[in-house]
Length: 398
Image 1 (cartoon, rainbow, N blue to C red):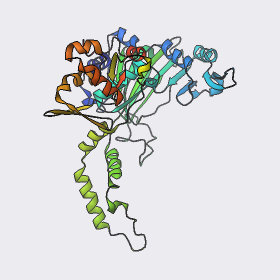
Image 2 (cartoon, rainbow, N blue to C red):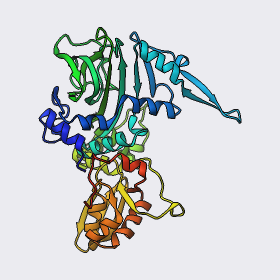
Image 3 (cartoon, rainbow, N blue to C red):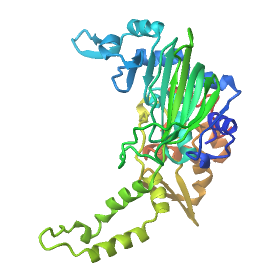
Image 4 (cartoon, helix red, strand yellow):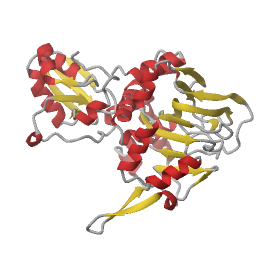
């Protein structure tokens, strides 16, 4: 899937793919300001908060370096039937923002089609899971204190300015679950300066950082942070632990009283490690990741006119002579080889208008699209979902 954001990030950071993720701090600038404003604006973020029932910790507000109690900016909206739903009190939130505050919405990709598509494109690009958080800071408000993340991040400054400090890691490759709490910041400052509209920054896992508008006066800052969680050796071992249950020897009780005979167990572990390599794990991780949420197709609501592949990772298309296999999201579909041109179109990750696609690969594309939608590898391209691709990803049959 070719997405304008990915091309812009690669150009800004001097990358030619995802291989540099996690290897070192780097920053640059996207000169396409139309792209920046297309991704998300402060008002669109506030509109998301207004129209949905959000709860802490997904939606939080900070002022003077401390979290504001939700009771200050939440109100229970009571329906005529007496049902109570927590909603953000926009007047109270507006007051906080005028005074100077930072609001944070985690997983904006769950609520906004543009952010959903951007995360999916980054997942296809990086072959890792991605989520995006949005941070809106007004006037002289501070952000989070100095901290580190257990994943790599790509930060895009969408509006205004914010001052940053990035330090080296104080522990190599720290993890969320680790043997060391890693709570002493490094003294080595890698970069400090101001992120302005269109700036992009990559902070590898474990690097300490903080951002603030303290002392900046009147103004704003909106940035989004794409969190990219890569697999580790510990992830591979956890995967092996799940596979070991297939073998009887690993299901035996350990003899606490006479001492377990460890030799057969160690031999079985060695065999398991040799049979299922880290490369096998990475392949299976992509193939077995569960399907994302999407709008179901119901023919009673209208015909199937447009679809798009919505799997977390690119489906694998395996040619086997007269047949072709599609492997994705824990499923394997076998189809005739003549379906290959239509399959490549439908599983490209780009929107497919079926009438236009039929003129390119044949009328059977409509029937095949119905199969892929039924199997949930593709989703119906609703107007709302389509808006997430507009001006960012070209139509597959264009």
